[in-house]
Image 1 (tube, each protein chain N blue to C red):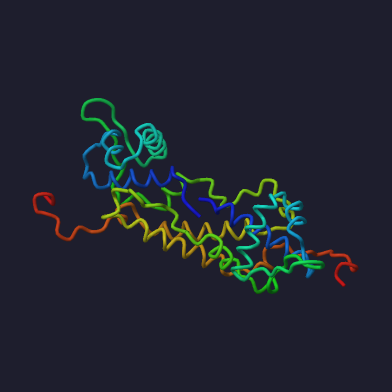
Image 2: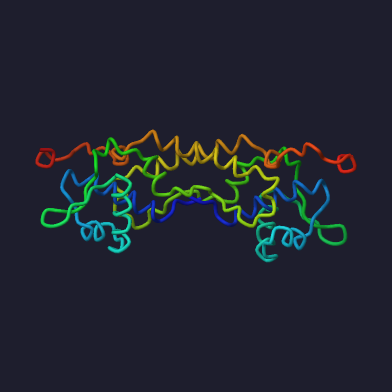
Length: 138
Length: 138
């Protein structure tokens, strides 16, 4: 069981931006910092803008940033938005389909999975910095 | 989010055998019925024998069968055994690792997922047959 690469990179991008403390980042900057291709990251950023998690501004002083504070971005919502086809299995062509109740059990388990993630915000995804220097805190 | 193909096929094989009502099936028979390659299915059957879910007997009258009644085979246990690397993401190379708590949140969610599945046995994965003919019921 694995999240899609799209979701994985979306989470990396959001967590990275949650650390940016208000300044807008460029795709190139995040791509270099997270070692993800710019083209791939651009697609992910567009999807996250479309889903309402990011805002993007063009031009000088532009870039991407969280659309709202990290405390208000729900982890479960991000994963549901970026990995909507959470069917877990593809029953296409399976001969057991007429008698099988596995999809129902898996759907229940997926709901339990999402309910667990929904208890967290994006802000919870970063360890608290105990000894953050005064110059940075200001 | 998707189960591995290995887990998907293992579940198909087990559900198929739960319907076999005690008779031993051959790999060829299940491969044909489920439209899975014999080589692939043989590997999966070997893994399920090793994990204690199936028994295999060679020779005339041999074949594979559930190691115990379907009611006693836990769905959560099958998925844990066939998809043990349930890390959901691969953090290798991610620059956020020193500050990131996402793996902890995902591990909690995976536990909720497995706890949900653990409420079911293999026998629960097949719809009850309301109008099973008398000749089959005996």
